[in-house]
Length: 185
Figure 1 (cartoon, one colour):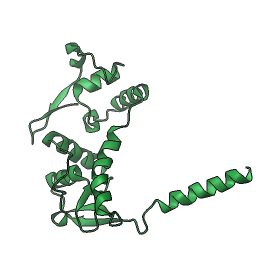
Figure 2 (cartoon, helix red, strand yellow):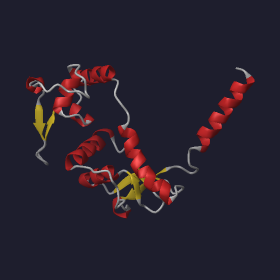
Figure 3 (cartoon, one colour):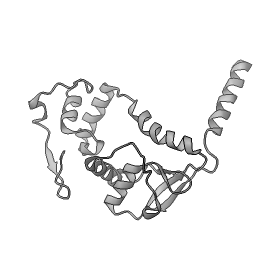
């Protein structure tokens, strides 16, 4: 490797390491001590909170709630609502007390919007869904509705769905006894 490339790699490695806040760790906090951000612009429907709760039950609480250093939520309002729905007493959290008030307010928006800016490799998504279905995994835990699952597995463009009423005929539905919502099986 030429000398200039080694120096660039060293600088990049140093920048990457310093981007991680010092003392970053996951801590368990009681739900009642957490304070949602009153001006959080992200809305969570009851259906989405139920989906998050089902995901937590299946996979565990794998995505900690982000806090501002004073138990105020920066990210994880939906996860907090799901934890309440599940009757959890504590949740994993990460303190981001190093953020300024302006950075905190901006990150509340950025954390959600940046995730929405991602796209799908539709062929790989189709293959994964088909494989998971073949392994008898409960596809409703993935957040897609029955129509979306049918479109994807049939190779239809996810962003330009063709609404064929018969496409969902082979999707079996199950009704949640607790909330009454129907989900693809």
